[in-house]
Length: 270
Image (cartoon, rainbow, N blue to C red; front, top):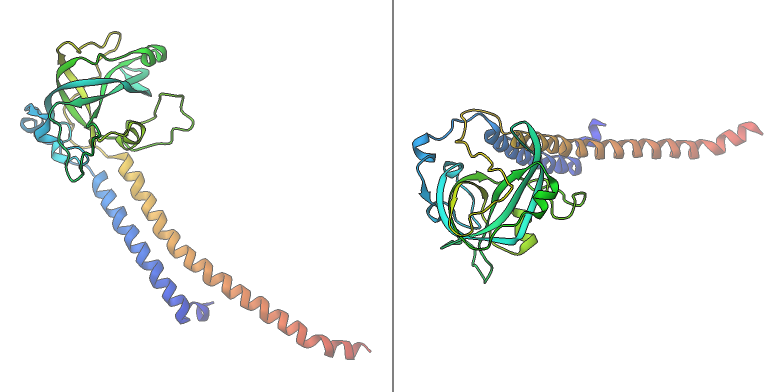
């Protein structure tokens, strides 16, 4: 089998497999870095309220320094653009997040042209233990001012098994496709609201605490493990291809031997 593996053809395939494995290892290392324990930004940074449009740009990554930042903004909810996210715990009780898209005043886009599409950001209007209340709650479309904390966005998940109007995670990647809008790499947890549209009857405000020091990002850790598996799989595929060719050649050689000895055995039998 070693002789088969050392043929130029399979050495070339091995080089390609190792290059792919190296790329996967680099990606795994990057994910491990993201998953590592990190110090929270100083409170003087995140707890100082900044204008939303000076911190966040639509269609652009959210810098780590701006995650969990307190911001002030104004604008209008889009009542028809609303989803419910189940399995959200509050004070030890399971319940639902009610998430409504919000169009900030003066929002800007970075790197991508607007092309007439509205710029919106998901806002967690509140929590409720009642699925019916979550699904029937509606935001006012009137003008509103709020102080909120930016939260990093969650990863997308399949929705084919979810009830209509529900999503398992708060992913802007899925929301922009659902409503054809431009959005941000984050969402908002309101801390205070004022103005004609500031009503969330029946919903409990979801706490927006400052970031904690330390901790492990389990999602990034899981992705890092996935990349390691892909790297090992690339080498395994090469080994399997070499082994299959080796076994095929043995089988062909054995068949040739049988065909070559068959006439001689027939002569001896007579």
